[in-house]
Amino acid sequence: MIHGGSFLDPLTSETPESRLYSMPTSSESADELSIADLQRHIHQMYYEKDAARGTDGTFMWLMEEIGELASALRGDDRENLAEEFADVVAWLATIANVAEIDLNAALQAKYGRGCPGCSRLVCECPNSEKP
Ligand SMILES: [Zn+2]
Image (cartoon, helix red, strand yellow):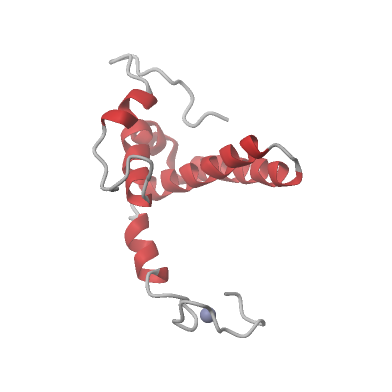
């Protein structure tokens, strides 16, 4: 599933790919895309459509992508599996945009100092607990 539908912006004939290479990133390497970069990138490409769709409709797309990830995990197509991981993360960033959640800040706050349960970098929580 291609995120957001149409690939061509009717106003500029710009493709998402051309925007990707022109946008500034905070990552040191051009090969790295931080979660903050990704969220900005998704916002730039799709925010108007995403905001119009809203959190409920966008959540349904995420669930569809998670189903596709489940199928890919059971298959043996590594390229497809990688794409499905990318789609899930992209749709999660999309919902964060619509819900106005800064993913980088949220991740730093919850996981930036180690396990949220025991505060260790290598979790020492009992196996009966979720982490
Ligand atoms: Zn822990």
